[in-house]
Length: 250
Ligand SMILES: C[S@@+](CC[C@H](N)C(=O)[O-])C[C@H]1O[C@@H](n2cnc3c(N)ncnc32)[C@H](O)[C@@H]1O
Image (cartoon, rainbow, N blue to C red; front, side, top):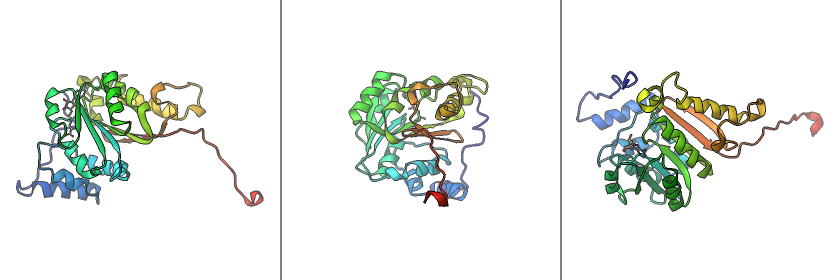
């Protein structure tokens, strides 16, 4: 696997004893001031949780308005259950939080901070059944296999089920450049080619090519690309109208 992007990326604090404080200080110095999600991250006491530093302010930016509300949050990729703990602390007791993972060992985290269901993000029926059990979904965070076809398949099933005003986040998109994940700079399956399609679909009024990506058509109102992170806003994509206002329209 190409690890160019990752070489030297592991944060090395000066002292082990100050490890957590130094992680928080690094995030604060580069991206801060950021909210208290950072404290839930560095204060995590259970099994491992592994996050790129720049993701934390992005989560805050796109998700803070969901705190302390009966949000329905679905994370693809449970691993050691650490991020589900962090999300529970962040969103509060009213949030309906589900995690899914293909690894049956993740079932041990069911009922700890969230509900955990075992299955593949590439299995449309499984995804549908989880969303049905959740009573709908407001936020999806795809941190699963990072395979291009899986990312696309999950998006096609879950985005249409996302509530209006919902948020769809896909992370670790450095994988888009790696063959092992079905990606590559010139690889047609690179998910950033789909992003280009989403941009073209959003501007469907401006060209004659029609819709390229039917599952999201007419419902993407914002597309935010950050390093390795894609955020899609769900809403009704109205055809733009403009007005001229001047003294004679009073
Ligand atoms: C990066 S880890 C998730 C980390 C976790 N979200 C966190 O922040 O602590 C990726 C997880 O995706 C799971 N996974 C891999 N392929 C999957 C698939 N097809 N469907 C669902 N989960 C999958 C792996 O078993 C692994 O636990």
